[in-house]
Image (cartoon, rainbow, N blue to C red; front, side, top):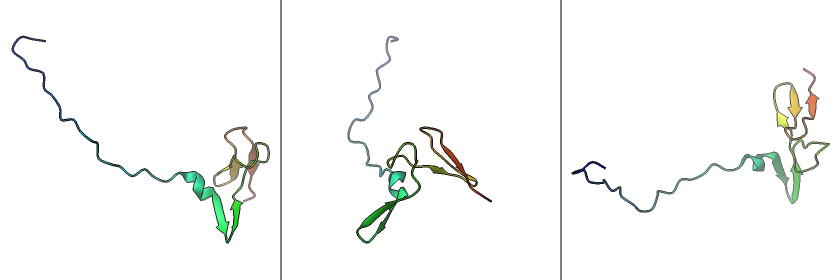
Length: 71
């Protein structure tokens, strides 16, 4: 440090609370009364891995399984 300059101290304290967005995995389930049903899940990986939806296909990012939709 150069002689004569003082170190500037910043204010310390609590950070303001920020609400985080809800996880998108909850949008993959549907609740019908007491029954919980899943959207499209991967047939290779099992029930916990969902397929990504696009315009013309469903795709699994884990095992690269692809289902093409008829247009």
